[in-house]
Every structure is written in C-alpha cells, then in structure tokens.
Length: 457
Length: 138
Image (cartoon, rainbow over all chains, first blue to last red; front, side, top):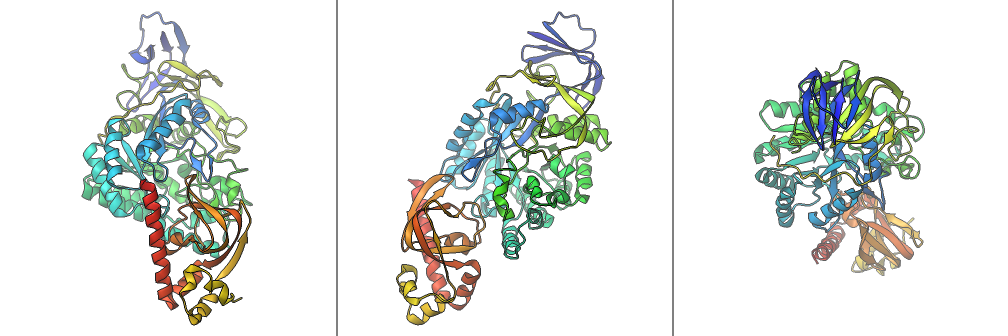
C-alpha cells in the first residue's frame, strides 16, 4: 500500500520544506515534489505541517498503586497518546518486591500487549545486587537499554549512593543509560513528617516539603558520581532552576549530562496546587510544581539544549476515588498527572508564543528522545527508510483543552479551559492511519515492542 | 495517661525489663484497637508509630504479596521508624486487634533516656529484616 501525503510543509528537526511524502508499506519511501507515482491513497496536507510522530520516553501505563492501578492502561493510554500526536512511548517496567528484573519486565510485556502504538521499556531498579547487575546486561541485550533509579522514597525506592554508583558503572560497561529521579528523599521525608505534625495537610504542602534545593542537591550528586563512573546520566522530570543549573554546570565540565522536563513544569505552578479546597490534589506529582519563575528558566534550558527532551511522566489518577485518598494527608495523594495526550500541542504553544522555534519543537518532542534512547534508526524524523510515523498537524485549529473531550481515561484535566492552537489531525504509524479527524482507526494491540539500541550519547 | 505496667510486662518486647524501666516506658506508650479489615499502615507511607500486638492478628503484604502473618507479642512498624524510611509493607488486620503503640516522638525520648531498650528494639528489627530477606531469596 502506497500513500502520498501531498501539499504539506514537512518539518523535521533540521528543515522546514514544502514537499510531498511518499509512504510505501510501513516506511517512508521518498520526500520531494512532483513525484510521478500512483499511490493507493492520497492525503491532502495543504496548509498543514507534516511532522514526525512524537516520542514520549516517560509514561507509566497500568502503574500499580496502593492495591489499585493508575487510570490509564496501555489500551486507553496509547489511544490517548495517538490522538495527541504521539506514536511511540517508552514506559517504565517495575520490579515487585523480591522479584527478578526479568519477572517485572515480563509482566510489562504482558500489559503492553494492548498498546495501539509502538512501545519500548525502561526498567526501574529498586535494589542493586549481583543478580540485578547481571540481569541489567541481559536486558540490554533484549533492547531494554535504560534503567531508572531513585534518590527519593527511602525504604520503598531509594538507593544509596554506593548502589547508584555500581549501577552507573555497570550501565557504562554495557551501553545503557541511567535515568535518575533526583530528589534527596531523606530530608524531604523529615519535612513531610514535620509538616503533618503541625497539621499542615493541604495539597500545597506537597510542594513545600520537596523544595528545589533538594532537587538541585541530588542532581549535583548524580553528575559527580556519573563523572567518576565515566557513565552518561539522564535526569527525569527536571522541575527547577536549581536542578537545571546543576545540569548546566556538569555539561560545561564535559560530563555526559542530560535531562528532560515535562509540560507541567513549563505551564503549571505551585499556585495550581494552592487552589481552594482539595483541587490542588489534581496537580500533585514529584518533583512538585514550582513557583512561576522557574518556568522561564526551563524554557531557556530547552532553547540552549541544556534540556534535551520533554516527556510527560504520564501517570493519571482520578480526582474522585484516587486522588482523594489524601484528603486529610497530602502525603497519601497518589503522585502523578495525566498529559500523554497534551504534550505535543502544549509544547507547540511554545512555538506560537515565540519561546522555541518550529524545528526545535520537533527535535524536543520526537528526534532527540528517539536518538537519546536508541530508537534513531526507525523513529523520530521523516526520512526515507524510517518508519512512517507521521503527524499531519493543523497549526491554525483552535480549541479548548477539557476532560470532556480528551481521550485519557481520567476525570479531570490539568489544563481544563486552556485555549490552544494546533491539532494533530491525522496520525499515522508505520503507514497505518491511527487517528483521522477525531476518529480512531487503530486496533487494540497493534503496537509493537521496540527493542532499543545501546545508548550512544 | 500512663499504661498499666503489668500490661507491658506480658509483652516479649518489654518482658525482660525491671519494674522501674517498665514504669518509665509506661509514660511513653499509647494504645489502639482495630477491627478486621482495617489497615494499620500502607506501604510507601510516612511512619508515625510502631505497634506491639497484644491481641489479634494481621497480614503483612509487600507489592500485594503476603510476606508475613503477625500476632500477639509481635512488633510491627519499627523498621521504618528506626531507619527514617517509609513503610516497606502494608499491614491489614485479620482479627480484632489490640496493640501498644510507640510514636516516633516518644521513641526519640526512649532512645535518649533508655538506650538499652532502644538497642533491644534494634536487634528485633535486624532479626526481622534478615527473616524477610531469607524469604525473598527462597
């Protein structure tokens, strides 16, 4: 089957060019004008951008939490992602207590059978021992080439510096990337206990007990250890100026230091967490939302490439029935926000507002994450031989974000009522139409597992 | 309120202490009751107290897997408290339960004023951690 996408403006990380795109089977066959082909189908892209399908390297579908699960599984979450222009996700497989990494990973393979879009996995490592270190090598061989560690949540996820350092050395040897949740969990938990002891139970206290200085401290430690281990390291969901400055400093020193931020840190703030009543719970995630002044700094970081990627950290919990577990105690509010569907359009507002350029936008949402995480042979750009994962984006469409109209399986939107420009109107994966004009055409489970290459930062 | 010393003496954790020590401890403990199905604490939560069970039973689960059953005389919740960690497991009551509680603040006082009792608690904790680790390696 051959599809010709005609009359649009092709936008990649490096060029913006008026051209047609020929898709043959699952791959992009050619880009150019005046191609003399007889396609089976022609898509008119006049007045629209033809962009690579976005790659979201930080999602948590079907994440277990306190005996239940977050509200999107791979079926609903991948469908919402497709509506938002995202055609590839990399989700975090989780090892349960006492399990091997293998068992945890196998469970994620099982869960992801329902995905409508292509997917890969990172592996969360909760403890480091000889068996785990050996398994890391095995997983790298299977295309799981990145491992997430935690410096927060002592007793649950937090690893000590020795364990982190060992994992970094092992990752460097095997060509894997260490991803770090960088917040110093010890002092944070002391603050939480003290705040609750003083009766400060409202959602906003979630942010006040996790101050930026403890994120900056942890990021600093990550890159010092990475330098010693001669390993690249990647900070997930970077939220603050303090943390960004540590990334800048490390990069200036020549460390292979990388970081992502998320739309919530660019567009939302602690003011949202302080909304009246319990509404602030909708915005509880970790690291927490910061004061507004951090946002501008993060945008600067994106422009200067000190932040290379924007991912979502999509982990939706319903306001009624899940977030309200923490009605009397902010530390019991499930952490996470829904946004897998919103990322592409939200980031595009950065183009509309003049914060980033159009090509940089494509680089941040598609090209850089694909390259960073070993997918750059197939994903992240529009070029002959690449998977035909394509978004036909109408930049002039105006709409209002709302839980009434979004496709994520969650009863609220963090961006409720926000006017945005742009709509991923037609979304293709490997040549197949997933979404067209608000209709979903993909079958549950048609996504494929993507073994990823070793990391070559 | 000061707890009856005889009530404490019946519990293995405190049983070896003399009357004077027990009388001291009695100032620093509380009590609680819980019915079947109630949760004493959840995995991942911030700890506030430890429990010494007098009557009743409870299941300990971790990531949804049952990792232990506890009953009269057992101590639970001390690891997170003593190590400044979050709760490593969830404890759900399986039959009507009565327990002596020691809060984080009171434990601090005990650590300072009665270090030998604090030491005893730490040895119980170590034994329990080893037990849990052994089970995980089975």
